[in-house]
Length: 219
Image (cartoon, rainbow, N blue to C red; front, side, top):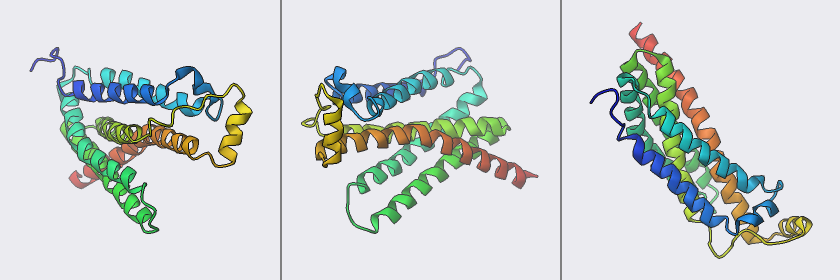
């Protein structure tokens, strides 16, 4: 494959990000009412901005013409999928109310982070550079975050759209007295945004740690 050949592995992940964005758009209808969500609408705007940034970054990073970097990103993709399944397990377990569930959730997140670290390790070995390891870890974590985000957004109840209220104070009153539908929507949006923002940071960190550990072993 020549250096100018399009990267087939980046197409599915960019499409996944676009699919997440489309699901989010459906869940937030009617769009003019997003401003009625907490934080003057930031609860709804944050995941929109995050997913839009993902689309740009995935397309840009995945377009790297360096053969070694492409191979490292491909490794990140392969490890990002099983890590994404673990992240989905975390999301689904969160719907349970058993007290011990939190320990299983922590275990799933730790396992996912280890896979991102392995992506960083293998990516750094391919390129002989810890910087590429960081990129592979971030890329892997972004894919996992998109998978978890898709499940979170898909499970938002369509019968509970964004609350329509000309008076934002009434919106906050609804939250204060325990409006379950609004609280559920806000929780899902915040959880999705958390995955999108935190996963790449963790992926880059563990990718670097594993890459440095791999270099020390060689030394």
